[in-house]
Amino acid sequence: MTHNTHTNNEFDGKVAIVTGAGSGIGLATARLLQERGASVVAVDRNEEVMALEGPDIAPLVADVAREDSAARTVALAIDGFGRLDILVNNAAILLNKAVVDMSLEEWNGVLAANTTGAFLFSREALRKMIPAASGAIVNVGSYACYQAFPTLAAYASSKGALAQLTRASALEAIEHGIRINAVGAGDVVTNLANDIKADGRKFLAEHGMGAPIGRAAEPREIAEIIAFLASDKASFIVGAVVMADGGMSVAIK
Image (cartoon, rainbow, N blue to C red; front, side, top):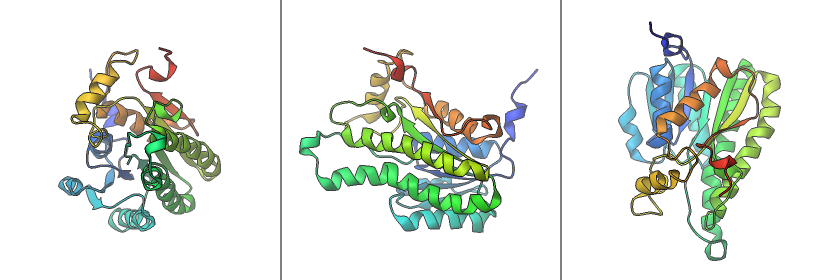
């Protein structure tokens, strides 16, 4: 007997936007949502996202920190697929630098990509979701929503702000039938750390071994949590940051 048929087509007829979809968690999420019936607008600042183009995936090269990118992306969803049901704010960058050595441009760049981008895309999506009185937004946070490490002040600040954006916007949106939540991801084997480490994927895999679970996650594992939060199965979850970090956020070491 099989037990997975109830999830195979759970997003039939739904339209989703996924940012940072060129690799890692975003790519895994775009593919998972498509597998389960959704049409997807996949956004990334890197050209590699164009390789996803297909009947149910419309890729777009755009910088989420730019105000016009959100408008262009939502317009592509509406014009190409006729509606918008799900937004996954996943795009993020990492900076490894002490506060005393950080420039204002570097600080602003991290906040713009990791927090302001989520605000811009959420605002534009809500303008379409509110008249429809339905929708779900999932923000991809981190254990850095609550914890910090030396030289990661900008990243931790951006993820802490993202957690509060999630909570506050969830309270505004739920009266319109729209749920907003976040997933607090732990170390995931992605390209996130490639700009600060010679082998970013290896670094994240090794760092993840310090979590109580003893390993880093694969992108598909986080994509599954995102899909759950975007689905009707999570109908009573509002304004939550669901931690999927292998126990990192509850451990004291």
